[in-house]
Length: 245
Image (cartoon, rainbow, N blue to C red; front, top):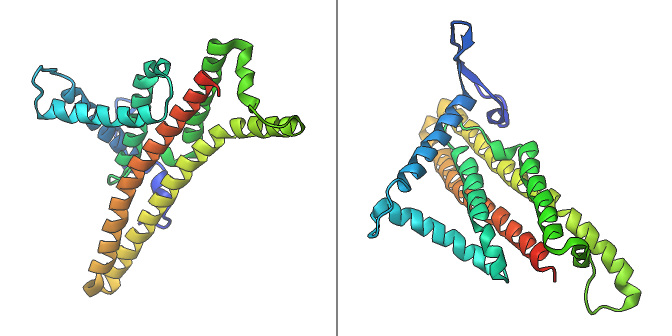
């Protein structure tokens, strides 16, 4: 019995099985990994046969790729950044699949843990700094110097620019973590409410069921939107360190 809407963020064991000294127990994490494996098989199938005249599966894969590419182009101002698109596409799909697959029954919300989202954001933040220095050397520090501003405000604005730059990984991590945590917590609350109504007032069970379905489809949209926002912000930050101003 679920006693807290946050229990689905924990690893729960459903069947204990020990064979030959090894633990083969079925847990929520195992089920979640199986769901991710199913997506891996699906996308491997999409890319298994590349035809000149695309079939339905190839068309689906190409449309997904082109949709992400159109978003990527809107955030950049130089063709030099196009070489990073495979990385952005992989990032978008990875975060979306983590978000979406956690909505399954017994799904574990990986992106609902602050340590995971911090790992994503700080890894890309450090990579962006390295890219900036590789492209500009010490000239990378020009990113923090605003142009065409009065000298009396220059020092103050430089401090603000430095602060806003180093706050970026925190905003990336907290935004993704908070949205996924809030959405899954809301799903848990409505699920418990539905169980309570079904046990005590079964005739009104359709009311929490409709609410639960509405929140579920909302979370599907949130999974996509959060992946889009994360990838878009990384594109913007990448454009800044490559082009500077």
